[in-house]
Length: 123
Length: 108
Image (cartoon, rainbow over all chains, first blue to last red; front, side, top):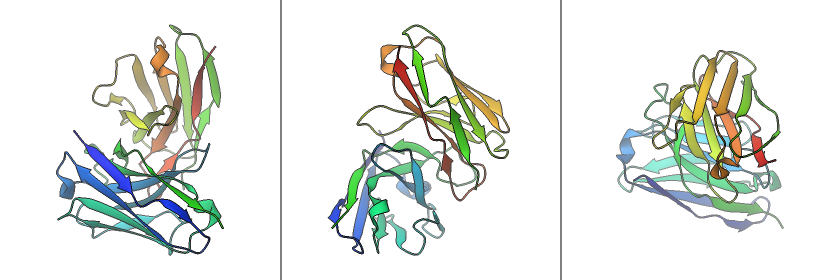
């Protein structure tokens, strides 16, 4: 059974930093693209970032480009999201997701989701 | 960026009735479309990928169809556990992956 456990969320002032982690189990981690998706309170889903299976290719939403960095440690079955220069509009529940095996383009379109970790940016 | 538009925003349905949800893309996404279900306080769950393929464990009452820019999710006979918000998402032209704004299926 696929399990994705996010951690690292919390309350941070504007301009601050957080590092989210997502510990994965139940599948061959180094064979799958991983993705972060966020959901602001009462809002829809917004794709944030994806990283290839090897970690050699990353992509970001324009809204976070230059401030967020995605990475992975395949020896620890963990994907990370380093978030710097946080803004109030980054406040959201951040989900880690495993890309679908059916997605041959490598986009990281989510097949399995974690339960999310809450990030609140406020003074 | 491909914009995904879902309609209606809210759909009021009685248990046992059919529900039809629509998703439109601003340009063709071929068949690279997925549907997700989200219940309050829960993470989204994959229902459908590649327009019409049900994910593991998804009941046959969920059917996806369409191509190009017009897609539909049909729930043939609504069960109580189907009242939720449904999102479509394209993975044809990325980055970014883009989601529709969601359709809330509520009890009539």
